[in-house]
Image (cartoon, rainbow, N blue to C red; front, side):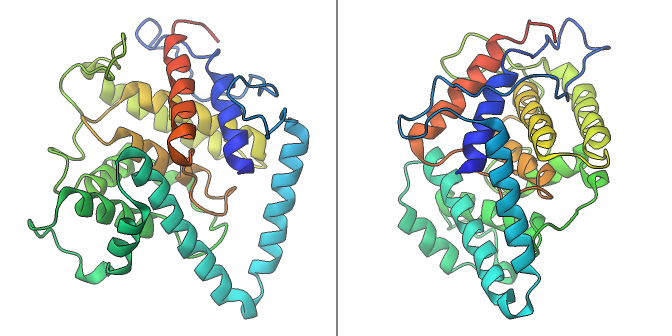
Length: 292
């Protein structure tokens, strides 16, 4: 919950700092941290209270260090393996249940009967089953069975993103892993995503900037999460694929934060928090014309 509160605050902070892609392509900086994190946010629940950024960072750091210290114990290896597996399932549920009108128990049934080596693209499987299996398989393959794995940022490329999209969209999304060729806009919104002829160049630029900034030695939690918030906003504005961009964006955001988070980060839990997440992204898109 601390990560969710912290991350939403950062997404909302970044909303007022985004620049216009189409006007300043050559000098556009997408990954940055020179903005303040809001401590008072319009969407907070009454029981949350105002956010003290310094205190929140300290609490998260303490939790991380506590887990890191206990994870080294061989006697607790089975416990932490189960802990990670359970959170993978939670991540799956949070993503799927919120996107679709599906009961969590059905997801449990699909996952419980799921075996990696026996997975097939059987056409008899309905769309919900395929979607759940695709996402679960992707989660298993890209998130290691170890805490704080120190994954090299060099693997964070556009090809990596395309590969995730292929897995997520297997037998569900047409032309999975291929950038869209047509203009697109979100339903019931009055703006368009990035023009299709600009997608390739801006995706390369976005991932290149991520590799540069996330590779900085001694990167702090606060700065890393600010970078990740920028990445999420800009990826979703580029909207490179015809479908499945939200799932891919959240998976990629968790990937760049793997050295800071213990488990994959879903960004929202339930429909109410998803609406808050979407409202923050709308605000970010509305302010794309503002300069940094």
